Length: 215
Image (tube, rainbow, N blue to C red):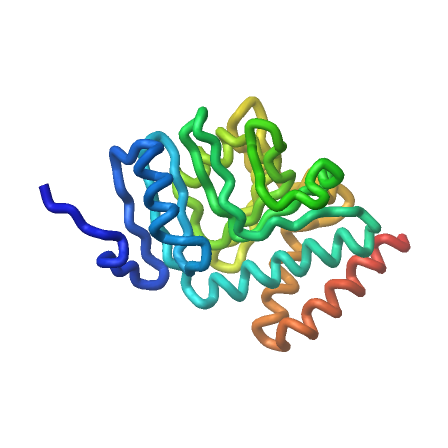
């Protein structure tokens, strides 16, 4: 048997490595070896581990979508706790996932001041965001953890998934923001950011949100 250390593996940007037959103990060891300060992200479900290296444009998209969500919540005066790309895992379910961004909204009070999470006690985030095509491993991990709403952004278009009976169903509306055409808004202002810059797009988005609130 040939044994390789993870630092010997090179994952090109935009690519992923899939490891099979990875038990929970090995998964924990791999997380420790990768460390917390890293560009690579992981998804683990059903003894399969994916190690993903995002593209630069991936980082841009995840940041601006996160900013759009924050603006919406601010203008609606809805409190939240943002946990970014925190590693969410449960040993009893043998799943682990690192979203591009995530928010506690309905359950924000439970998360105030939390610096270490235990999903056997703490709830999963209310809204998670994934940029680029989300794999079967990632989706099954989100479903197992019970994340109610998952946004997928790929090739300039947003898709909203809502958890129903343990499986994701595509929805035209966001349960978190039912009074807003979220898919239309996110797509429109991300496209604007590519031609006029993210600051201009975010200011225009804030104005768009305020106008809809005032109707």
